[in-house]
Length: 100
Image (cartoon, rainbow, N blue to C red; front, side, top):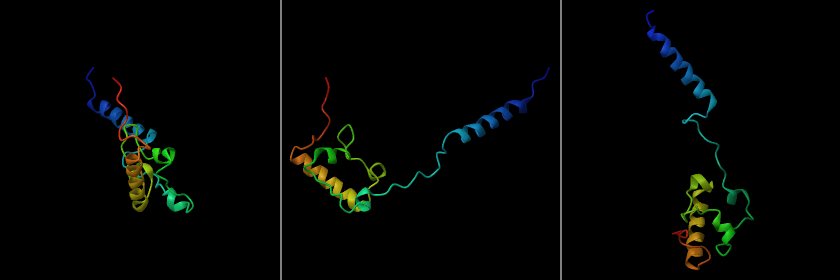
């Protein structure tokens, strides 16, 4: 019995179409984050508070970018300045500790 060539292509099309329905598209736009400092005028960033500053630092000790923090550009600069001040005063470490 001869093999039908179009049959395999139809399966591939169905599989690709099903795959698109299950997961989110890689081209879809994510939900826009709002800056929590702009939303709440009473919320102030204190560089002496290690817990508050630690939210904006990764496990490796790097400053998280705006796309993760959701802060506006003005407050992202304030976050960066607060982290740098906290590092200088040894409130938070410059890097993560190394495990040997």
